[in-house]
Length: 190
Image (spheres, rainbow, N blue to C red):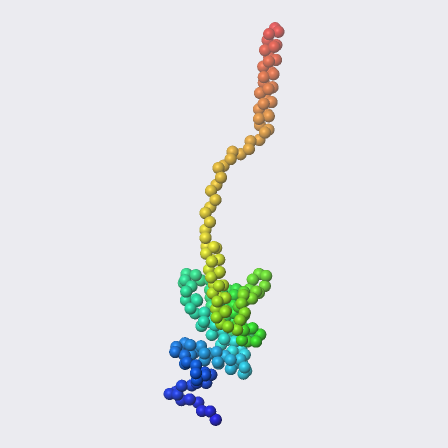
C-alpha cells in the first residue's frame, strides 16, 4: 500500500526520476493543474475538467493580454460557467472544449454563423491563434478610429438658367422693334 508523502518529502508521482524537477512554482502549478484536469476528465465531472483546462489556457494568455494597452477596451476576457463553459476573449470570440473535452476550439460568432478559428489539443497553438486574433482586432480598431478628412466643397457652379426667360425677353424686344418700325413707317407716310 502506498502512503502519502509528508510535507518534507517531495512527491514524485507523474514524473520520471530522470526528468529534472520544475524550477519555477508556476510551472509546477501548471503541471499539477493539467494532471488534475486529466484525472477529473477521466473520472466523473467533465464540466469541472473543462473549466480547469480553460483556466490553464486563461493563465497561458496572461502575458499576451498584459501587452494590450489599457486604453484599448475591446477585450473582456473571462470564463463563463454555464452549461458549456467558455473562455471569452471578446464579445464575439470564445474558446470552448471540443467533444472529447481535451481539444480547445477557438470560435468566432459572425452574422453568417459560427466559424472555427483554431482547434488543437495544444495550448500553445491556441495561444498563437488568439494572439493573431487580438492583433487583427486591434488593427480593425485603428482603421475604425481614423477620421477621414472632409472632402473640400467643389467650386459652386452657377445654377443653370431657364431658357424660357431669354425667349420671353427676345419676343418682347422683337415685338417692340416691330411696333417701332410700324410707327416710323406710319409717320413717314403722313
